[in-house]
Length: 133
Image (cartoon, rainbow, N blue to C red; front, side, top):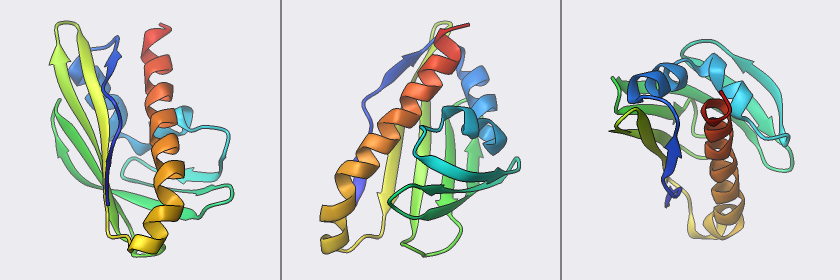
């Protein structure tokens, strides 16, 4: 299953956005209120999405100023990657999230809309973080 958010314009350089997203401690400030039990360090985080599941993410790859790839630390509830894709645009950045998960068709029907909403909320949180400086 593949999902992508719409692209958002962030009022920060690609290097600022990359530095922020590269430290998973920073993601807590982007999380919507449905996220509880947050724990993190620079390279991993775990949390619970109310009504859904526990998630544990680890940094899989960092491509400076372009992409941060996080992966599920286990295959429960399923294995996936979540990439933050960053494109510089002057003193701003264009950012989108791309999800790629190993999800069976039945589960896909149940989680596609809630996951899309969750990823959009994350990107909204990033936008608010930088656009309200």
